[in-house]
Image (cartoon, rainbow, N blue to C red):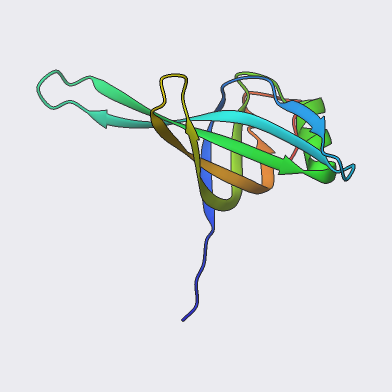
Length: 118
């Protein structure tokens, strides 16, 4: 059986990428991505937006370039492998959030004219 774990998402960066270096010396950048799903409400003829927040992690040179070039609000397209982040909040409740280990991050040139794909 062939298993393929590949996802491509577009959305807006929810914050500036946070760049850090792990003990091995590798660069790692993390940012949140707001992915909107618009649906037309037939009774009001308006579009209702449902936002899904995804945590994105980039590594090595891509991490450094993402942190240098992109900022909060940048519209990006990401491709990578899907994972599920889990943690316990302050009240002791188990929480989870989808996350992506990015292989590619591309800025939307219509909204960020100086951005290029990484």
